[in-house]
Image 1 (cartoon, rainbow, N blue to C red):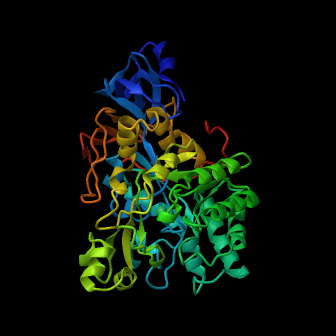
Image 2: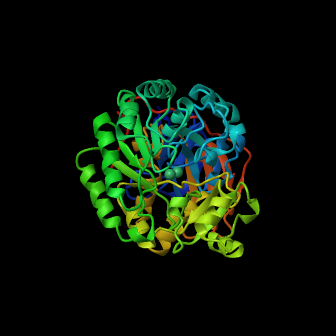
Image 3: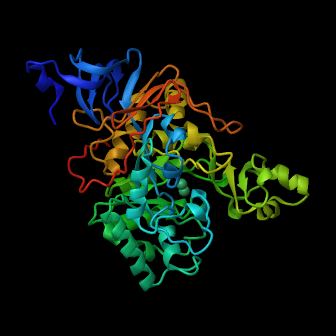
Length: 500
Ligand code: ZN
Ligand code: CU
């Protein structure tokens, strides 16, 4: 890739499509900001420097603003939404330029349903949206939809189980594992990032550690990775972490613990020991985690998580859609029954559980191994505010207002770090020759506006977002241009810069 500096000495004036002038560039590496111009030609960054001289199709004044690599949302459930709602406003409006789908054991591909999608695959939509029996078909659908953001995908263990097993409440047999492996390998060949599990859910909790190891074994050869919604985020979280690390060691693959938290009132205050266990593992194997910046989780309504001491707000209910937005306590009181009984009547349903301590969440958020992932649920009629608010909330509330971590570190957790961990080469940094995924924002005003009461609300302070060089969002509105692509896993990990 020729840098603009090479052109300077040529006779004619260099040409670029977009020149962003005078922004404070925070390049995603974790390094110090510097004021510079950034030139983009086609889908790439071609030069970074002071007072660049070039004939630009468009000049954007970045003075007083921060220019960062577009954010990578490492934990999403946007699998079918990137195709059905390719504008992807909940993410684009936050400065997100890449989403990683297929988390928590659930993915849209490869999937062949026999009936309704089992819990929690129903978070991705109803049976009609599962149209991708092979990973290749899913990739083709993304390419045809041209979403506004880039998409990289994991394959879900629960999705594979559901393809090959009659009942999910048992361990898979050797021949079922063989069939699942075949599908996983086929997906890896088409660019899948790796395997995700959701061992806490009843649809996967009967899987043994050996089942997961047997399935995850081909990941190493493909340079894939293993992400996991742990078997437990409550009392036995340390055991669940050991299981995840063992899977990583035995399969020789990097491990990402999804939405690391200490859930449930009885586990508040345990983030110290949890992070110690993470650090101990990091000493001998590649291990990291992601986190969303809220003290409440959200998923399907799980009877095991009903606790009268915790506020649980219903986000959707198949049998009682009118209950969305109300708390389980209110509903139970109205019906004059207990909360468990009320939950049984509402299911299948979704909920927000205010079951995390703010202190634990902050400690995990600022830990050097933690990436940022929204875990947003785009199909919920009343979603958890993390869907629209995660990234600006970290930058506004936790960096600017509370000083929890420096801006350049927070941006590294959203860009360079996830690009390295997930093997997305040419992304996540502002460098010559890197893809022009960029976000321009005002660090003084950036803030999330989505709340539990009013969750569908775009962030403030995002001035412009480019995806593969395409200006996609400006002044709180999409431009209508969409530049996203399917991102295959980079083969091998060489050439990918890693800092922490
Ligand atoms: Zn999960
Ligand atoms: Cu999730």
